[in-house]
Image (cartoon, rainbow, N blue to C red; front, side):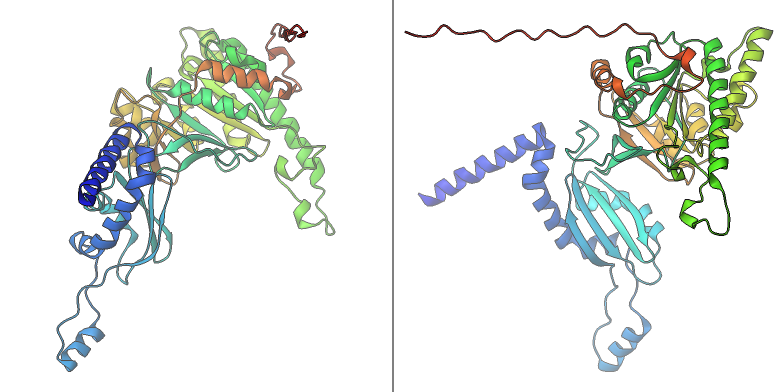
Length: 453
């Protein structure tokens, strides 16, 4: 009788595990998957490393000792496991490489390791000399993006997406001041920008927008914007006003340096972050939507306007970081066909994010001068996964990310709730959005129940 009950319980647990794996893979991983994965790694480790060519032959000393003692030849040595830790979405395996091994060997074998350990994905990176870290994911974390409940939100470092290894992808403006965001129509480019504004709304920062689609993307969020331009003519004047503000900020920094023999090293600065609190200007994030609309022209007057716009943008991305001005440029294409100065402008944009594109040439505009592998990964983004993108920087590193879906209503609510944080920028008053006052919300009085006799 007890054996029958044991069989029934086993069948019920197996059925529950299969259903949970299909319906909610995150909970399946936390309940069953992590145990099975750790067992596979422990029991298959040596054979998998040998099959993937990640072992080294025994040393000459060990071979000589084996001959002298008449023992069989020692086996090849595998990398030593320093640490194995389960994570929210997979496993973290830290290995000590053997002499003669290279971190590139593990990077090139990630696909074979993924099949051997029955994991969804594996990424490899070198932690320090001789130590490599393998991050394994037990399920497709980008199929349904669920950001962790606790993420770091400090200063100008904001969470914007989820990486394919289960970690949070951050946008740090002080580390990467300027960025380029490419993507075709319906690729999720606008959702990424919307999520960016939603996260920045609660920060001590001034938002400046340029949306030449008559403001249809940024106008609903205007309560949190200190300046907004919805046509190329206003955009040219707005950019030149930002360049003038940048010059004023540099004069403040230069005046406050006062370098002398008795000035402490900690008080010498070359950017706004070293200024005293009462003198530090508010940092500015400039968001440019559909940059091609600023570069196109059809007559002489529009050509002159284009030269003003491109010149001001190049100056901002070259000199704006120390003045606390950060630039986010969005568009479908950003190549040399847009005219003179575009290549120089693109070279100053350290951060690169590319959503799904319509051709390989568009992907090369983002990663062609950084990493050919990132170009290939960008062209493989499927249509049915909007918001998925490839993020990289000038170092050549890249990773797949996906932005959580943010509705326009969520972004508008965040901007409205933080409208009191919107600063007034000197010299940009003419571009401040004019909006009607919010209607007061009437709270109905609670109904009074009749007293019982």
